[in-house]
Image 1 (tube, rainbow, N blue to C red):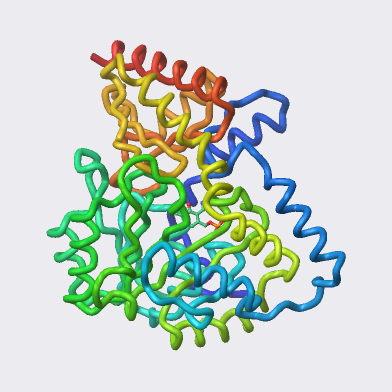
Image 2: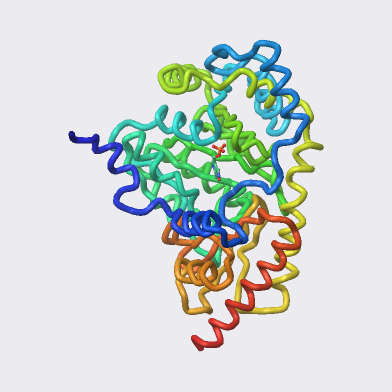
Length: 393
Ligand code: PMP
């Protein structure tokens, strides 16, 4: 039987970029210890106080179908948090609760794209982006960025790509690069989408992980609220990756249509999980800071570790739980370097190539293991790169 073109072409003939991760997991399953610095997931579990709230809600009977757009209380709390942090008036009608940020990305693109539309995204990119755009029937078009510019998109690249496109997807703080978009980058993005009448999808799931600078939500810029859909999530901010709670913020009309999509796909998020998310959000910034703190520490460790060498160059990592390292002096591609590091030293990092052409010759290191093993793994990575560089020169 014939499968749909849509489903068989989600990866467009490419790989899903997770080979190293899968190999590391197979090694672990076979009994070989591996330091895993691959997936964007905390080394701590969800806080017991959040689990207690989840348990209490379930035991109190919140185990039936929950309200599809999200509970009123959770939508109100998300709206208040966004309004408080951005100054943009936001009510529950601007909020749809989804099964994680990933479902929010899918809903947002389903809402603004017709089959055949050009949907832009910034390269390097989070691995699911092209597939998500294709799932909505669009032509996924990367806008390249450059390592030497800290992987920030330039005004000229944006202005060249935007004419005739339907949407632009951005992500700051950025996975995989750790970049936080500068005010000038945000200005250029807003100008480009306003001038060429695009929707902007702003993926802000790392907004609580800022090490340098400030998180700027483009929805707060003049003329942007009506054309911006913001993606949020509890996954990174509250170490709740497995709970699958995220949201889209946008104009009420767009949200009302996305609610229909939720009815036809997930039929909402479990009520006891929403109550746990509500509890976690009500804890406010102190809990978010506590969850971000290990990454702040490990980023400083990374800087210290790389300070006295010049084989590896670190892209300014101003936010998120990753650092992107330029390993081109080794003469290897990111793929080959990551593969050799796994083989020889049992350390798993992601090849830059898994995140697009712009990150070739780089590796992404997720700062997701305890400080000591992280620092030790980095030391090994650096001396391995130095050996390779010495051999290739
Ligand atoms: N956007 C980015 C940039 C991500 O890195 C991730 C997860 N790694 C997501 C969205 C989706 O996260 P979730 O579905 O867990 O909210």
